[in-house]
Length: 447
Image 1 (cartoon, rainbow, N blue to C red):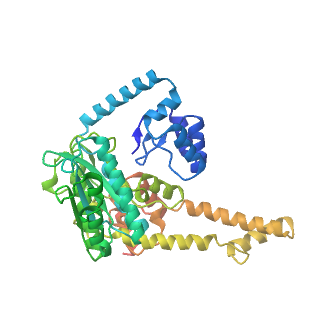
Image 2 (tube, rainbow, N blue to C red):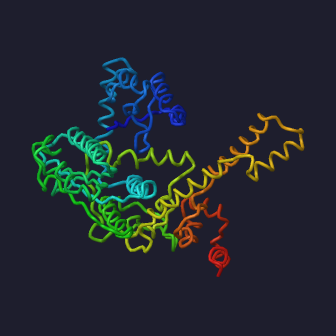
Image 3 (cartoon, one colour):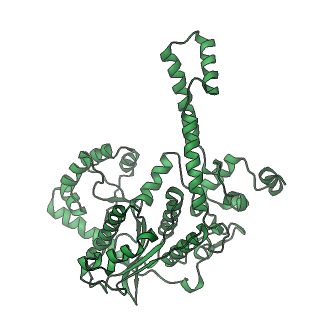
C-alpha cells in the first residue's frame, strides 16, 4: 500500500514522471529524494517497484514506508516525528469528510472495468465481500495488509492454474457490516470450486491461514458463469454500479441530450434502491484500487504508446454506461478492433524498397542528389518508417476500423457540444460536424 505525502515541487515531479525507463526513474528518485505517482496517479510515497538493481537499491535505502523515507531525506528524528503527526492529522481530517466516493474514484472503477475488456477480452465474473470485523480484525493496517496479501496470493494461485486474475476493489463502512471491501475479479469458471476452496472453504484456505476464521458471513464469494458478451458485461457493470453507489450526490455533469447540469448518479442510471447511500468513513488512505494490469499506470502506458483506451466516462457518453443501453459488451468487440489496429500498424511499419511511399521517397532523393549509396537508401527507408510511426501515434481511437458502431455516431451531437476533450478531438479527426445533423447523417450513413 502506498502512503500519500504531498510535495510542493510539481516541476520536479513532472520531470520524474516523464522518465520512461523505471531504472532511470528509480535512480533520479533516490539521488534527489523525489516522490512519484501511486496507482491512482497521485503524488505519493510508495516503495520503488521493479526487479532491477536501481529499484532494489531504492528499497534498501529509502525503505518501504513514509517514515523510512522521511528519516532518509530529513535525517532528524524530531522533524520526522512532527511531519508524521501533521500528515496523520491531515489524513484524519480527510477521512472525516470522506463519506462518499469522489468522481475520480468512480471513474477509476469504470475505466478499469473497460480496460479489462478492451485489452484482455475479459469481464469480471466474481464478486467477493470481505467483512473485517467478522474476521476478527479491527486495525486498519492489518485490514489493508490482508487485502493486499489476498490479491497477490490469488493472482499467483490463478497463474499457477493457468488463468489470468484481475481485480477492482472499493472499501466501505456500514452499520451492518462495519468496515468491509468489495472485490470484483476474474475467476475462470473452470476453477470456480478450486478458487473458493483455496480462498475460504479449504482446511488451508487463505482466510483460515491468515485469520483463523473462514465463513460465508466473513467472506462472501459469488462466481457467475454467464455466457454471452452482453450478459457478461451486464453482470459486471451491475456490480460496478453497486460498488460505486456511494458516489457523492452533489457531483453533477452535463446531460448529453439536454445540456442541463444533472446529478452524475442519475446520468449513470444508478438504481433507485442504491441512491443516496454513503460509502462510509474509512481510515484507509485509498478508497478504491485495482491490480496492476488494469490500473491507472497500465492505462497511461497505453496512452503514451499511442494506443489509448476508449472511455465512455471520459467522453461523457453517459447513455453507454447505463444498464439499459443496448450496446453492452462493446469492450469485447473493441478488443478485436485493438488487435486489428496492432496488426495494421505492424504492416504499416514494415517498410521496404517495394513500399509505394518508400519508392517515391527514393526517387525524389535520387532526383535531388543522384544515385544513392546503400546507407543512404537505408536512411530513406528509416525516414519513411519514422514518419509513419509519428502519424500512427496521432491516430485517435475513433479513427480505427472496428466491427461495432461507436457512441460518437449515436451520441455525436451532444458530445460535440458538451462532451469531453477526447470526444471532441475524435469527432474533429473524423471530420464529423454534428451541429449540422442532416449533413453528418449523410456523411456517416449515406442517408
